Length: 211
Image (cartoon, rainbow, N blue to C red; front, side, top):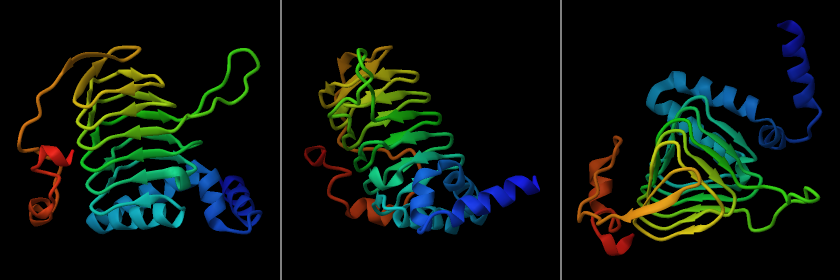
């Protein structure tokens, strides 16, 4: 145990900036995120500040869960009223953008990067974009190049490959396929606790045109 502590300290000192160390060492970042969870509500604010320090673009009222594994958080963008649940893995080799009011269940994996099958060269256009008001079920895998339109619902265990999915699609399977188009309600129920006054004052939340 002592050897591990000494080695971790040496690893940190090898880097000129702590920010660079956290971007390249998701285990250290995960440790700090889990530590901040001890401080309840204030702990979530500390998690957000930590990710912003690392270069992530984080909006207001964003929830960060425990045991979150984020590689290169500087490529991560979370808009207002979105969040990362427990046990989520985000390997941000390319940009990951999750828009407002988009939520996901536990155990999701985001992999914005892949390789050619002939020479293993990195593929281009591997960014991941998830639109407003989407719901991603538990244990989904989102691969590079995915562009999910506003209001999509992704069933648990679905694997989204690099393609564009139309708005308000219901997507299931491996690989993910659109099985139907959902009709959005005029009122969106947020599956987590937020400041009600802020929600009521936001023009997007009760306005489908805003999605």
